[in-house]
Image 1 (cartoon, rainbow over the protein chains, first blue to last red):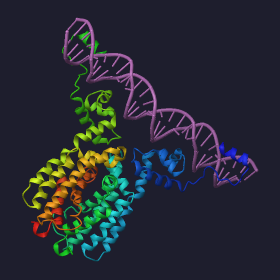
Image 2 (cartoon, chains in turn purple, yellow, orange, cyan; image 1 turned 135 degrees about the vertical axis):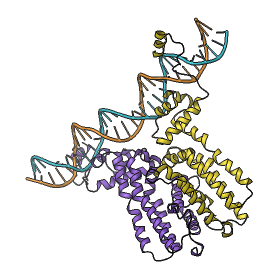
Image 3 (cartoon, rainbow over the protein chains, first blue to last red; image 1 turned 60 degrees about the horizontal axis):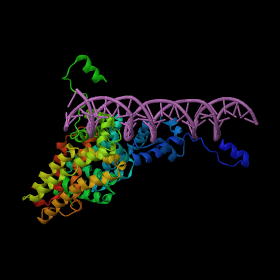
Length: 221
Length: 221
DNA sequence: AGTCTTAATGACCGATAAGTCAGTTAAAAC
DNA sequence: GTTTTAACTGACTTATCGGTCATTAAGACT
């Protein structure tokens, strides 16, 4: 209606149409817009009206590509989990040096992956709203947490074989190596306004604690 | 209506009334019921209908005691934060022995406080839905996190004065001592169905890592 | 027993947001 | 150029749930 009246009144033929068909690009755009809203408001708090506006489309368009709100969220999750850890695994397998250096290289990457990617948004929604999505926790665990776990176990096994890892309850649960990074992520997400602590401080403390706490004395410096 | 008809038709006088006035006990009962629902479903996912049913009252009764849903939640939070850490602080101030022993006594308590009390429910909601409650993050930080922080700083300062704490980035951020406990709490809340890891394993790894990683060598055994 | 106060009830209201779908129109097909 | 297809739109429908309030009735008092 408005488009027609503009055409008939001004006679311009070069005006861009009010809508464009961009079927191939749409899903990714919607997912990206959705991810931003989910990051701000969590799953339940996100309105599809806002996702649509952010993506520059009408709300009904979302349903051309995703069955419902949850399907959009799951699609966004599937797109983002997975690759984050795999690259690091390859690096670890090819690393020739001492465990201490390996940890000092890997831990910063894990921090970055957790704090700066969408992974922390997903983790946040998982923690807060995971019971709403029966399959999501399993997916996230399988694609992200388990891989991280296996990576850490690989590092510890390697270090044990080289005589660089101290035996003890910490080496028996390599997962705990990640604890300061998890804490950092949660701190940034939740408490940084109350008490800003830069991620770099967490990282420095993390490296210090793990290299001192996990390695045999001869392998610490 | 039904109550009346029962009375007039059967003539029984011993039947319990359909409702009881219990004004003094109600707020606590409603809070307890609310806390259970919040634990299961988070804030947004909790329906006051379910809280009321759990408390054995009508939904409208909740509004006799709490202005709205958020007021109920905040009341529940206020009741539960605060005391959790104070007792531990007193214990630390009076402890005469080495820092290693002190850590081995305090850390298990902090785990328990976090994992088994309602604190982890509140933390969970904070992480997932904290932006819904402008004042809640501040309250939780002030009443719980900050106290825990100060406690850890006190332990580290004490240990430094006794020459038992190793200098380094970890000692400069005592907060990070808590990281494995936070991780344990999140694991129990979020991933225990995918991969059960008992809290005791986290605790053992925690103790091992911190005593090895934070203390000077002479103070480790 | 009757009266009064007020705790408690549950049917109802209205705001909200997910989902629907008839209508519009861009772009492909002919 | 015309016709057909389907991407897109946005007003509308519907279900949900927080909050409301007229009514009921418990319990204290006389």
